[in-house]
Amino acid sequence: MSQPAIRASKDEDRLACVLDVLIVGAGIAGIYQLYRLTERGLDVRVLDAAHGVGGTWYWNRYPGCRFDSESYSYGYFFSDELLQGWSWTEVFATQPEIERYLNLVVDKFDLRSSITLDTTVQSARFDDRSSTWTVTDDQGRLWRTRFLITALGMLSEPQYPPVEDRSKFRGPQYHTARWPEQAVQFTGRRVAVVGTGSSGVQIISSIRHEVSEMFVFQRTPNWCAPLNNRIIDSAETSEIKRNLPAMHDLCMTTPMGFVHQPESTSAWDHSATERLAFYEDLWARPGFAKVASNYPELATDPVINTEFCEFVEGKIRARVTDQAVADLLVPRDHGYGGKRPPFEIDYFEAFNQDNVELIDLTQTPLVKLTSAGLRTTAAEYPADIVVWATGFDAITGAYDKIDIRGLDDRSLFDLWLDGPRTHLGIQSPGFPNLFFLSGPHGTSGNMPRCIEVQVDFVTALLDHARDNGATRVSCTSDAEEIWTRHVMDTASRAASDPLKDWKYGANTPGKKIIYRAYAGGLDTYRSKCAEVINSGFEGVVFSA
Ligand code: NA7
Image 1 (tube, protein in one colour):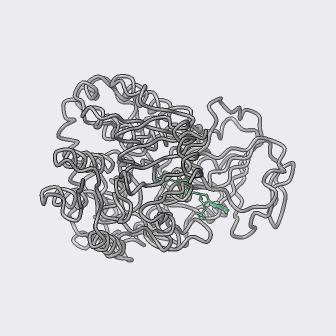
Image 2: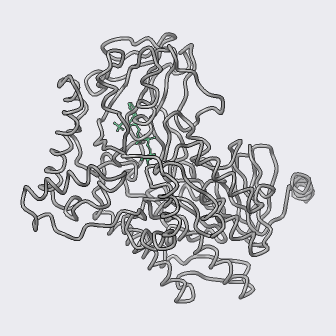
Image 3: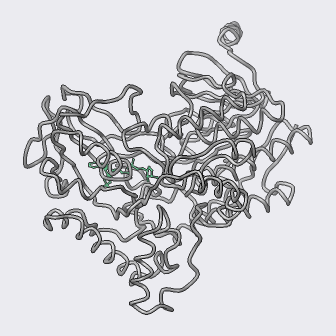
């Protein structure tokens, strides 16, 4: 009898706040959701483990980190004043500029006082009687909230290779997604970079002229293509600003949310010569045009995919002096789009430098770290600094770190053990008043455009709850079943290789191989969300 009473009073002492909404994550999604709900007069708080706002754009502060979505298509579109007041300096802005932008947004809309930083959420429990969540943080505080929104990021849980003796290395080692705030000095240092995905490609290109020596440890080469970045001058800025609303609407009608429009001409309506001219044109265009505006057959017809890969191979070989090195840089195990292709600035030129060595981990795997460097099965490579550009436990990794318990103490981890089960990637049955942003089964591409749809959906859901006096919002098992099946059906449309792509969890040892993103496209996702809203939220139950 006395036991629960004592626990309750201790809990009350630890109670930091009773809220309408608690958002976990102060990245692109968390900030926009905070803005929308604060606008409605709700009592909202955001918690984030980082020391600053920005999520991805706080943590990934490594040299060379920048957008590969066009800057002006990436920002927020909820305020004309913000749109007209901010000018991006490059087509693909660097991390410091992006972080400045996000801080400006937070200050301009007076959101900072609603954000608590340096706070890691450890658990969340739903109380059936009061229809509230109790969230525990790493400082022992409790936060009670009616609604809980997780804005954890699809790629936020860094992953290290399972190599022996990682702590034995005597120098500093950094993961690209946990980069320190103070600048790392590379000048005159011997640097080992492990991983050649988007992050590895960016940092290798960026530090190649500073290092005294660089060892690049590559397991799988990627189909890297030129980013084609450039400065935006004032005339172009004015032109961009004039067209922003139209450009936004155009992005929202595409499958990936980019400014690049899908190509409607079939590859087979062009001759081989015309196709080559088409590829050359794509090559000169910025960023994701090579994926988003390629022939429709790129994802579906192996003949066209192989032809494009041969074209890219030619481009790589033309830039790399030593063809034995080029042999290692050309992917052999997946087609274009089988894995998310990186976009680069002078990446291949790094391998023409005498002080840069490429180590093929498929021939000589990484064995361990020593105090002085990295050892493969063939040799030891001395280094002063080790950079892990080894990616993420993607999509569900950040969820697995929080003990989330819904009705009957059921854990979300258990529900998603064989793959996530969601309605619209936003709710799971048995977890009332919990909404996911940019989590599993959500659409991806130009992320803020995808996030915008989900935040607006959750906002509409909460408006509906308020208007109907509902204190509990749940999704039905039927709705979850239908959406999860739709996610699986559409997965086969993606060019993704189940054994290579992080969207399947293929990059995380031991993780079940199952599609965790949504391949139906942003345009389809948007219509599905609109259908649910227009139906009065079919599949969602509102109760008092
Ligand atoms: P990625 O794209 O997952 O790349 C991680 C890289 O690290 C990739 O080259 C991996 O090789 C390599 N890796 C991972 N584990 C190991 C081990 N155990 N040994 C050797 N090499 C390893 O992450 P990024 O951070 O570059 O990019 C993530 C996203 O950020 C990207 O998709 C964009 O959306 C932005 P592998 O290919 O697995 O053989």
